[in-house]
Image 1: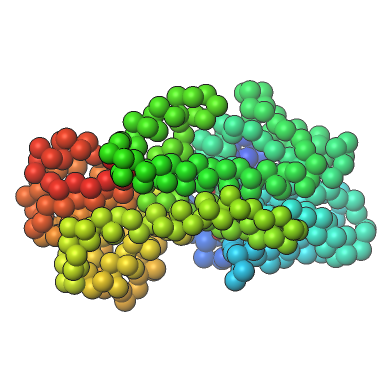
Image 2: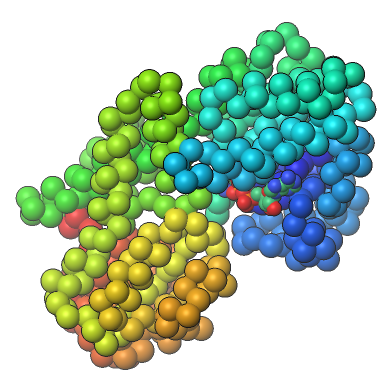
Length: 436
Ligand SMILES: NC(=O)c1ccc[n+]([C@@H]2O[C@H](COP(=O)([O-])OP(=O)(O)OC[C@H]3O[C@@H](n4cnc5c(N)ncnc54)[C@H](O)[C@@H]3O)[C@@H](O)[C@H]2O)c1
């Protein structure tokens, strides 16, 4: 099938590449010309395990193209995916400017029956707005369908998630439309491999995405609050989480206490869901609490640090991990930003290391004085304390005896509970973690 994917970011590039890998002819479009030129040269603008190899192979085998020419891309495909960003606006609602722009282009350039498949996370009612815009722009000359097909991939495992989704959700205005057959055809290789394809009405599909992310964020805030309780009660959150998670009704995932959720999805989606609730007269009190707990959680590690070093002025604090989670370079809403800013406010000297997110982090901490080091050991050298903020495997595997020697102080505050408390004590560290 000829498919166009508009928006070549984390979701669009993975979607386009995986659809090409499944045998389709895919054109990926982006307004960012530099991004398109880099992709044509085989330079992948994001860090995502397994993606580079797939992009290069499908590009070489001519199933994958990159262009900034939206018109020709739309005109040569029967199916147009929109995967543009929906960042928060000033009131935390999803900013739909890019989605509406793509709808306008689709309406303007439509030259026969086509399906507009929205992959972006959009509030309920958006697909209806998209449909109206296309109708207006095209003047009703050609038939078209709009489908809401939310994406559930996770950065860091995006290719694997796209190819092995827990479920594929497709919201249709009319369940008997031709779009249903198209969706069935596109996803047939995944359905044949046993992945469930769920057709819903279009409003429900839009809500499924927000409700899923909000539920997962709720699980994280829940376990973080129980972690605070464990600290006061003298218990260990890792054991409690294991005991809870073995219950099939609960499950063990998203029960890792830490420094709060971040990233480009959970914070913005929880806030946008709350706002949409307000707009239609539904107060999500539970999600307000989820957010409050998360905000408070981000600075708990600094409180732990200050309980040992009350005055941080001129103290050297090493930071291991900047991305909001391992295996990604995405710094959007990373808790490390809040923590580092707090350390800087207190007058600390910050030296940081992350295996892949340093370039993005440098843009955020321009002229802040944060020093970005080449290795985790360089960051830790002569540090008064070390804060672990992202659970990269390489931090689990470091030579902690060497770290003990090169640090000036002996305090490690582990925001991800990656080390064993007993081992740390035996090595002579003062070790603080979350909920243990
Ligand atoms: N990142 C994730 O893990 C993830 C997971 C699931 C869903 N989502 C949702 O998917 C959507 C995209 O997220 P992302 O992280 O891929 O965003 P992103 O910012 O990485 O990528 C968006 C891309 O769209 C391009 N773009 C914007 N307007 C355009 C236009 N008019 N024409 C062509 N290109 C245009 C931008 O240049 C950018 O490259 C969002 O709604 C997000 O909430 C993201």
